[in-house]
Amino acid sequence: MLKKVLIANRGEIAVRIIRACKELNIKTVAIYSEADKDALHTKLADEAVCVGPAISSKSYLNIQNILEAACTTNCDSVHPGFGFLSESASFAKMCEESNLKFIGPSYNVIDLMGNKSNSKQLMKEAKVPVVPGSNGCIEDVKDAIKCAKEIGYPVLLKASSGGGGKGIRRVDFESEMENAFNLVKQEAKVSFNDDSIYMEKFIVNPRHVEVQVLADEFGNVVHLGERDCTVQRRNQKVLEESPSMILNEELRSKMGKAAIRAVKASNYTNAGTIEFLVDKDKNFYFMEMNTRIQVEHPVTEWVTGVDILKEQIRIASGEKLKFSQRDINIKGHSIECRINAENPDKNFRPCPGKISELNLPGGNGVRVDTAVYSGYTIPPVYDSMIAKIIVHGEDRAEAIAKMKRALEECVIEGIDTNIDFLFKILTNKKFIENDYDTSFIEKELK
Ligand code: ADP
Ligand code: ADP
Ligand code: MG
Image (tube, rainbow, N blue to C red):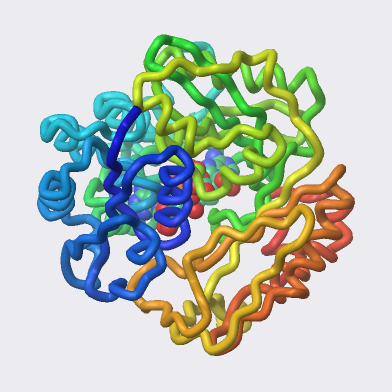
């Protein structure tokens, strides 16, 4: 078993990783920026090392300083969490070169699957249905117009290295192409330092359904069922649940098998997620693979009873999976709400600042993953997600009821949050009746 893990992240996911390590009797080293010296993850870890100033390019993305911190504290491994360096193949490679086990897939697999355009090519070869689109990258506007003609409008231009809902633009007419192409290219360059872009057919009114997988280093692969992440704002997830109410056993098994083919074709190891879009006729299409732990992993943990973080660490320690597909049973229904420090009435403008009063919900069937505490000041420089509330009920109706009462209990004073907005989702008729798609928020909650 690994003995000492450096956690190359901050916020609730850093806390989540530290907790898993403690339960496994593994020592932890937190890293922090100058803006985070009072952050919870620095207090919960056995040791904490400052890696640079507030701006993430100089701290949480500072590979040199992070590796140095890991080596001077005698860590044997690094957990990247999500965001930041979690999908950086070069970071994973440099970890291995520094004799640090990277808790995730190997760097060449990150390189392959982390690039959305390349991974689609491989998936096609593995007979996984993919969203129709360009063969690889689009070089110029002429190429884009030609490709869109073949695919048929509307289309999406997407950054190959994109993430977090950024670097995606819809194009409805040829006349819009040149402008859209230049905009996406620029955004891709600025946000992801990679200006390669590709094209996809715009799937009309789809559901987002993703499959969680675990693969050990001996070729054993298991999927943990699906999560429905259809409730999105600007291509970013807002609320997630498991199981998905649009799947029957047959489709669940088909998508699970496709996900396992994807894993085997890419020689994937550790935890990963295969994201699919499902159209009105229940056709499903591979969209991308996330080669890391995901924000919404707790809903899967709750319906399967598998601790995905611990499994990540066990797999990285060279252990074999202790269960097979037959052992995985989905029990009840789980929902997660992302609590953001933002103001929905002011176009979801981020709202950092000091939390003057805090009362987090609890009780039967409620889990809260967060790194905030009463008196904590949320710095303005990082992501606005400050907590996740996760509930588990016997069925979806009970899970919705639990989430509503959990949101009602939740008191966060001093800053604006999206709690009331989340409550509106849970009381919306279309949501309750499972009659919605990715355009739900845009259509129903304007
Ligand atoms: P998930 O896929 O786990 O649901 P999100 O897409 O919401 O997660 O991303 C999780 C976090 O990681 C967010 O803070 C998001 O901004 C960040 N993130 C995701 N992908 C990238 C990327 N390619 N580059 C930079 N940040 C990213
Ligand atoms: P990210 O890496 O930012 O998560 P994704 O490629 O996973 O980007 O897409 C994010 C979201 O954008 C999806 O969950 C979906 O709602 C929407 N989307 C992406 N591709 C398509 C498509 N081809 N048709 C319709 N919606 C799409
Ligand atoms: Mg995605």
